[in-house]
Image (cartoon, rainbow, N blue to C red):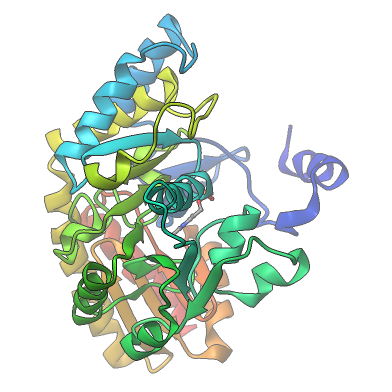
Length: 395
Ligand SMILES: *Cc1c(COP(=O)(O)O)cnc(C)c1O
């Protein structure tokens, strides 16, 4: 099918939640590159929104998937699953978690985290059911994760939402403090807000929140769906900030492109889940968890955390130089290879479109260009992007 036929099919049969998409369809990819059905090559600086951490068609991941497909796709959680147990071990060895439960997406992992926080207090006979999250956050598209997401545009059509959620301003400890009640079960936050345009929380703020949770018998939940799996240059953002949550969630890059999510927790809270308290048909199935194991092994073997750190520094240096010469750039915010470049309002959309016309894939969050390239990124890739951005800024 050519691109126009694909667009016509989509318009006729697919629900219109994504509106008019960018007019390309990718047929294959390798590393940083994606190739359209028309044979045009694009540089992927979005990584499927922080999903394809290994780039496209990574040999290690591809091989692991081929092997798993040839053996077995799915059994049931009635039975033991070898890659599920292995991936749980890998997550615990590389994070502050002691136990893991697998879901199929970020939203579903967050739902699992909310259930775990609630049942933890329920089993102690405590009436702690409220969850405080932050404004400008993003936690997913299910009804309950929309209730947690502090953006009116996502909530408005869907009232009544799951009760028990309130949002306060990010990075504002006083605002958080005044929202805490004896019923507060958990504080939920993204250590770096992704969808709102890459806004890292202050370390001092996170330290205050951690202390507050300890003092007031409140669970601290980090939504690391976007910031985990090496994105910040550490395995998980809680290590980037050196602050341990009681529960954190992962998804996006965890399967390198195969759908999977994870609820990860310390033993004292994880043990609140007893047999029958939670479950999933697909969660942690052989295919998805074999992918996760391969992603962990590839990041480790290829030292991609070190690469993410080094390329982050190089990228920021280049962007900062560009900012000096181009007043359209207002701000650069980054944590590892999650990078936001904020433009003045009148220029943002044009710059984003100009990059797309130059065959560079990025995303626009408000006036901020969000970059979440694969962790295999090289200096040459960054030089190419900077050149393209410079051309667009000069146009
Ligand atoms: C993408 C994202 C989610 C939702 O993940 P889905 O897999 O789309 O359900 C939740 N939280 C954060 C921080 C995200 O970036």
